[in-house]
Image (tube, rainbow, N blue to C red):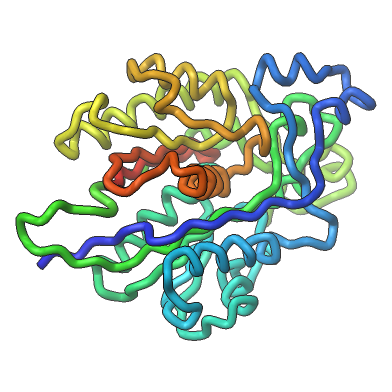
Length: 331
């Protein structure tokens, strides 16, 4: 018997407030067309000031559990990917646990920025394979609107708030049976690029009036450097995860990548030699929701019937740190 883990249910939740590109025209030197042409984003969602990351995650988690056919009491692990936590501590995963009432679950956060969901999925898969849990709730939840400098045209137009979740369930298969679920997972990082996408202010630096005035507690990004590195790493990690698992690129039905920028995804698709219909996108509606983008897209694809049982699906992401990762799944 072989122990594996399958995605048994998906769910997502986004804030009610829709922020269209035209809103930025009121106070920034930009336009709706400029944003569309460079990013593919038409609108994004921003949470109300009193909504936390765990609060945003709760409906996504409940939907994922419901769609998995399990009960809240069946969940024995919560792995939450976020860089916009409710508090420094306790973890947002513990706050989600409190909201859901699944007191038997272990719970912790993962910080790998936009790669966070792929990292969290890999960790949860390892917990299942090691026998520490059977049903893991893997969550990506972000309120990026809290860390954006609204005067910085290069960043504030890009990001949205949202939450996505999946239930990763233990499954055993007999030798020779077709293997469903996670086939392979690969993760990577290179801290020498840490300054190209970061929030400069943290516990390593004392907060002062000057750092506040400089906006050091907001997200900063060197856009061109991030673009070039993201394309290279996403192309490499997708090729690696597919070929090392014994498949060819053309065997993959869908490449579900982090929704950062339409041009990044299109360029990666060209690098891999795949058709556009294999690279689904929803960033036009939600913008870049960081760790939440992949589970939000998975939930939408499944509800639309685009994602079907038996398909070979490659998940991939690139984020600050810098970090990257990929997971190959037989849905």
